[in-house]
Length: 164
Image 1 (cartoon, helix red, strand yellow):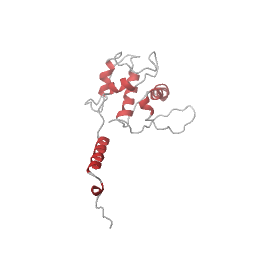
Image 2 (spheres, helix red, strand yellow):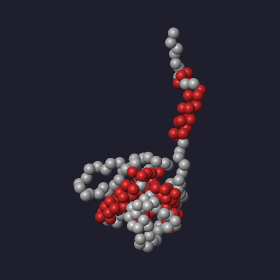
Image 3 (cartoon, helix red, strand yellow):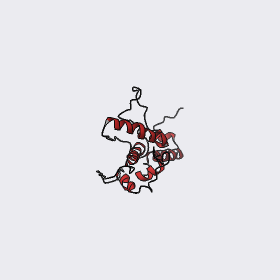
Image 4 (cartoon, one colour):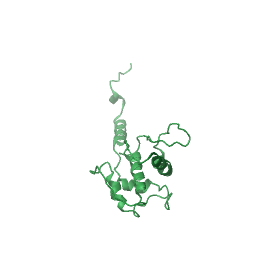
């Protein structure tokens, strides 16, 4: 005579319940938080200049660490103003911020350039190079829609993956 199963507890043994609960717990546990400066030092490859192709070394530009960490989702700072000189690695700082949010805290980001040509140059010369050189960012971009040859997208979409 067949036995009626009233619920999943009738089928699962105590060991199976433990394994299932442990697996679900591990899957739902939030990943460890990481500071943007720590993440950048491990993941961002400098796209151009004398250090092109190398991981960013924030020890050479220590003033960027604090600014970069202000952009953490955990930071109480919600507005950052910077007075800087030319050629002081702030484009690389922007790339690190964008990369951090792509990989670790997916959300909408707006990065503004002064002209369409500056945006196109930034996308093709800096952002695309950084994404191509940084392994953790290569998994994230969605394939861009087909465009006319040579035309750069003015917006980018990324999959919501990574750590929060």
